[in-house]
Image (tube, rainbow, N blue to C red; front, top):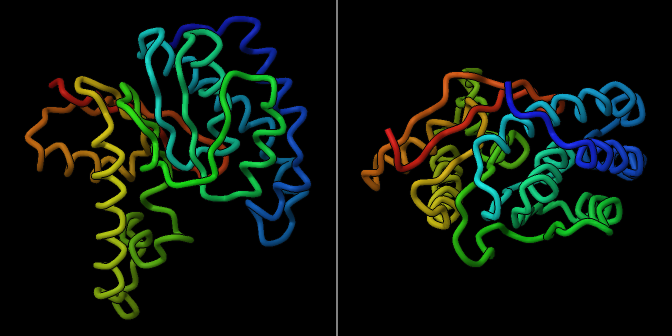
Length: 231
């Protein structure tokens, strides 16, 4: 069990979730039925996100720097826990401008902001990289994602398009992991571990994948932690 978050951190997490513009977020996460989606997912997202945040802050030293790739509603508890309980510098990036606007409005009095641009533009080094459900996003990588989840159709699978998407994913991994100080920590989904492991192998850097997995509410991909630079 991870260390419990402070009462101020828990209150702020609850307050931010209460002030999110879920109506605006409907079009970001759903093609239809967005109101029903958020009625069902809002509280599990806050609760499960807080569970992950409690585990994460126990693994990170105070005062460090975290880079969040593709950060959205799900990442709010971890971002807030890092910033409030550990006084860490957090930089969340998200290419969906509407979601960034909604998140920054809800977090306007907090010590960080979301950036609507590519995370590769982040400057400096980070001792923690959060990259969850980014490298296997079915919307962005429609030919790679089914293979990642073991659902590729051998009749319709297009190896040429897959190869192009794989190159994009490898570029993302190279740019983002290139900013990680070693030893460092990577938070990712269990389906994306292979990309982190591949990068470590190519750079001859030891790593250790934690055995425990933590459920998430929106995408559903379990989260795990990888120590990079240690066996």
